Length: 413
Figure 1 (cartoon, rainbow, N blue to C red):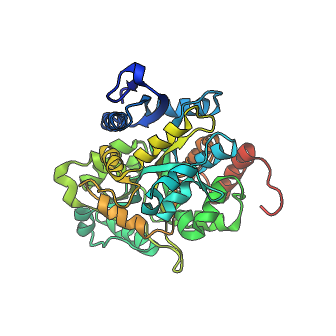
Figure 2: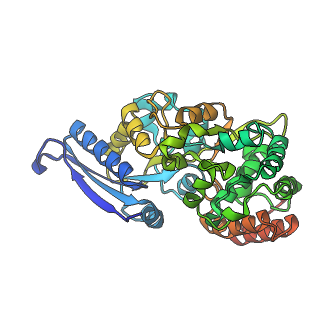
Figure 3: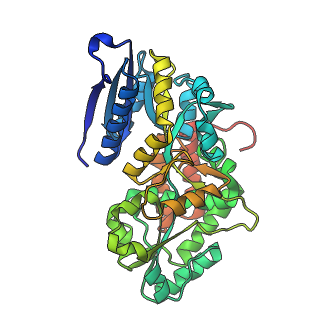
């Protein structure tokens, strides 16, 4: 993707001499459509607040991730920043880098229109520190024709998933395309196995370095993952493909299923839409609560914001249904507000229904853990998934990386 970073200075309908206040904001954009959506929203904000000189900088995804740590730790940071929900936001709060959003919550009712599971991603010790913009589900996507060819119904339990792998392979169809070149698609499989077997709190504590990877609960997760290996569920041909290159495997009936975030559906040819179905990751434990992977995009105010009142106005504006709907539509995501209209895009409404039934959201392996740990851990998960490591070898290597990044555990591991 072409890199872009553009600074926009917007002043509503008044001249420079009439500016009574200023405001700086830096946001992330993954594509030109999202850039234009931020630009349009900024123009609308300036028209509604003509006395505020708004300087908005829109930065390409990877460049933004590189710049964010320096902006957060700056002595004079931007007033408003884009962040991901979860551990990154919590870490910034604990470092004193973000301001609590007390007045925005009192000034309007946006919190009442967002799922509790989503609000928890921006809440630290009971206080809000961010405004959720959008989020999206991970799910199992399947090719209806490929499954029908093998006489397979969409699996709702782990046992059914294993059986479907056997029947798809017998029918000459790769059971699951995995895009292992990117590493993170395989991390999504670990996330879901752990969420289904051990729950959200255990999963989050594990990825935050508070639990040992040698715990028996993790041995059970790797044992379940071993069953996917034993049933030859993963397509070896897709191991060298990145996520975009692996998509035709699914929509051209060369693979039966894929675990992926809903963002991929923007790459789906329109003529193939009706051939693809979507289901939640299968159940494993009978009495489990259902937790889902649902990464969230968030706006925050920095603790050293020079223009706090104006920043609060900006955040309130971006919490309105119309703005949230426009931003979410630009990227094929779900608006955080439940009363905001959902774009007429494939699977979005089904995704909202799936997430509305969840007991909580995780943010994904590399968002729920330190970046340094995730970068070293994901190759280990790949080695296990493709049979290069035993379960115990993988657990020991992951525990060594946990200790390296988070330090020794005190008390019961």
